Image (cartoon, rainbow, N blue to C red; front, side):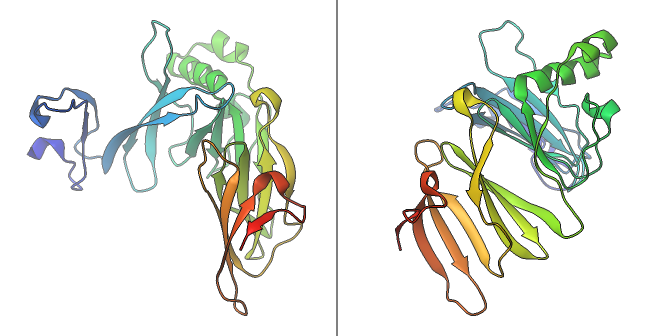
Length: 257
């Protein structure tokens, strides 16, 4: 109905619909304001990776660049509520195993991130998801003692320089592939998930940027470390190869061309 849309013409409500029932009878489980751009809810299943879980995410986009983000990790706990993330409104977040991946789009100061460091705008980092949810809940409750007791350890995968910027990432079963621009030349950096689902370890990638367009898409990010790698440049036609992330830096990296 009319009340289910925002003034921008996008969905304002999220409903839990069951097959065979009427959509108008589906209960509303999350809703935004009429003045929001849109709202939405989705689920990220990271339970197949060691230490990971199933994360439900709700978001309210109050502009095309800013949003409120709420997260709940499914568990047998009696606390079944969503937690508003203690991040800037323009911050990008996702999950990989037990880690929350964070793209910082404005300098993130120690008093806001719960550490003793400032993370520069344009950085790409990660932190233990459950620990950050506990920190976010303490911030929302204004519980200063709980905030001080939160032990957050951030890991920086990328920090921008005068010539470099973050461009994105893709994942396989065990690898995180980070895209970097260096003087507008593209680089791929390969990071492998640590033993027991621990911190990432860089295992290979480009030593310097190259004048080309490159992407690495997983064949199946849940079950395989094979990737479809596409490259093209001003002097070379587009090329698609099947590669094995486990063999990055070896002559056997390319499985087939």
